[in-house]
Amino acid sequence: MSFKEYDKKTYIVDTAKDFAARRISKRAFLKKMGLAGVGFSAFNVGLLGNTRPFRGGGLIGGAAFAQDMEVNKWLKDVGSKFKGAKIRYTSEATPPTVVLDKLKAEFTEATGIEVEIEIVPLEQVLAKATQDVQGQLGSYDLYYLDQSWVATFAQDTVDPIQYYKDKPDLAMPGMDWEDFSKPLVDGLAVYEGKWAGIPFDIPIMTTMYRKDILEKHKIAPPNTVDEFVAAVKMITEAEKANGMFGTGLQAKSGHYSLNCDWTQVVWNEGGSIFTKDKKFSGNDEAGVRGLQIYQELLKNSPAESTNSTWDGQWQMMASGQVALINSWDEFFPGLDADDSKVKGLWECKRPIQGKALRPVADAGFGEIPNWGHQGGSILGLSKYSKNIDAAWIFMQWACSKDIMTRCTLGGGFAPMRISSFNDPRVKAKEVVGSGTTRHLPVVLETINNDMASEPDMPLWAGFSNNEIPVNLGKLLTGQDFGGDAKKCMDTVAAAIDAAVADAGLL
Image (cartoon, rainbow, N blue to C red):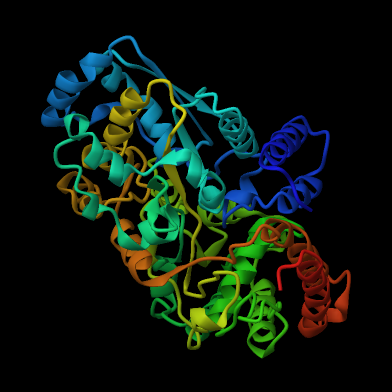
C-alpha cells in the first residue's frame, strides 16, 4: 500500500482516533499501522489502550529533592527572556514524565515559561504528534517518540547536538552529551547519522530472585538458563504445597507480554525471530528449543500465568507466589516499597544467559539478539514549535544531569545518563525502601552489555500482538497443536513469511 505523505499522516491520525474511540480493535489498529509503515517498539506496544503498569508504591514525590542552584541560576538568566511563553509536551505515562510533571513548577518559577504536560494513552500520543507534523502546526513543542517511530518523525525534529552548537547563547552549561549512555543513544536516538531526540525512558529485562527462598533451599542465584530452569523446578517441588511456584509468566494468549517472554527464550537459545534472508526463524532448532523451555517453565508457574500480562506477573512477585523471574526492571521499586509484603526480599541481577547468541549479522530487520529485552523512547524538539527556543531551554533542563537524576530519585527507574547512575543521591538510595535504586547498578550493566532489540519493521507490531502470541496461547493452553512446539512455530512461520512476502519486504 502506498500513500502520499500528507494522506499517509491523515490515515495514521484517523486510525489512531478510531482506536482511541474503540471503533476498531487493537488487531485492526496494528494492521493498519503496519500498512502505513508505523511500528511500535518492545514493551510500548502492549500499552496501547492502557496505562503504564507497576509504578505502585515505588513512586514517591519528586518535590522532596533540592534543586541544582547553578542550573536554576542559568534558567533565570536565560529563560527569563521568554517569560510568558507556553510550551506543550504530550507523552504516555512513562516514569520520567510522571515525575517531570511534578517538577515542572520549578522551571516555571525560574523562567516564567509555562509548561503543559499532557499525559495520554500511547495511541493518542501517536495521533497528536502525527497531526501536528502533518500540518506543521506547532501545537506541541516536544514529542515523546517510541523508538520505532524515530524514522517516521526524524525529519520533523531538531538535532539537539547541532542546535546546541548553533545556539551557544541558549546552551546549558555542563550539558555533557558524552554522559548519555552510548548504547541508548545508538539504539534509540540516532537516525541516519543525526540525533532525532534525547533518550528518555528504557524498560529492560533483568533476572530477579527471592533471596530468602534461594537461601532456604541452598540454591545459588542462577546465571544461566539451565541453572534458572533447575532452580525453578526445585522450588516448585519444595514449595508448591505452601502456595509458591518457582516462577511466574506473562503468558496471556494474544497479548504482547507473551511475545516478550517468548522472544527472550528464543534469543537465550541462540536463535532469532528472523534470519538475514528475512525469513521467520522461530521454528528452527534454537527457536523450538526455546519454546520447549518456556513450556517447562509454565509447568512450574501459577495457573494464572496464562491469563497474566506484566501486571499479573508483578502481582505474583508482590504477593509471594513466585521466587524467580526474568522480566522488567521496572518491577523492582514497587517490590521494595514501604507497603510491600515482600519488602527487601527480592534481589536483582543481570539477565540469565543461554547458548551463544546468534550474531546480529545473521538476524533480520535490524534485530539484536541478546540477554536483556528492551523497549525505549526519546524526547524530540519539534521543528514547527512556535516557541522553539523556550522549548529548547525546557528540553535541556528536563534532560539535564540534575533533573534526570531527580526523576530517578522520584521512583527508582533507570536514568539515561551515566552520571545519574553514579550520582551520590542515587547511590544513597541503594537501600531497601520506597524509591529504591539498589537495582540500578545491575540495570546499567545490562544496558551496556546485554541490550536486545526486536525486529525493526512496520509489520512487527501486528505479528507480536497477533500471529505469535495467539498461536502461542493456543499451544500453552492446550487448545491446539497437541503440545508440539515445532508444529506451533511452523504455523506461525507460514503466516508471517506469507505476510512479509505480500508486503514486498523480502
